[in-house]
Image (tube, rainbow, N blue to C red):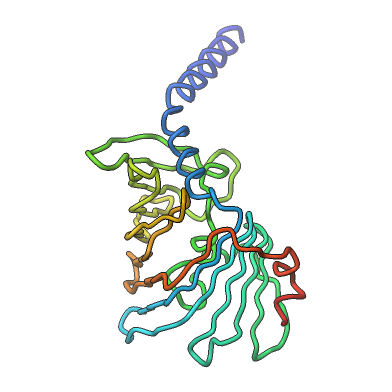
Length: 246
């Protein structure tokens, strides 16, 4: 019995040491700085041309407005005709609502649907509205070149995340993501994203184009920024279920 107790104590100590050694404060610090760079504005409004191509299908063009205030997001489609008036409200990773004009009602979206394709896009709702990775992921620096740092993100203990691993190339000048690769628990790459053509309004920077490629099924979605506003006045009541019906 004494030997068993000693063995367990040694094993626990070794595990604790291994966990501590695996931690990467430099990686988490860089992730925190990237998150901060992505969240310098209190409010943002983007108008996107959406070029969506499902595998084996012709490209489809949509028009989408994304309004953001803190952690709240409102997504509105104005084109094509069959999408006009469709809206989605994301209040948190687990509280999401959609308004479909054909039904005329606001419906809550199950949290399990947040990582699925959003209205046929390769982007999921979670992809479109994630503006900070640090709350759910821990980061390890795995390398660098002249212009980028390489980060590998894995879920924090107890966190339910859409991806088991995310690899990010972080631009050294702006500390913003340029390339992201998303993987499942078996190590299979699910998606690959690029964010290019960054421009800035003051110290707030955003990409002119975001592109997400489905690495499994094929197909891709491009979000081309047509215009954007930094820190416009957005009333709180715009981000409510009632406002979705208007």
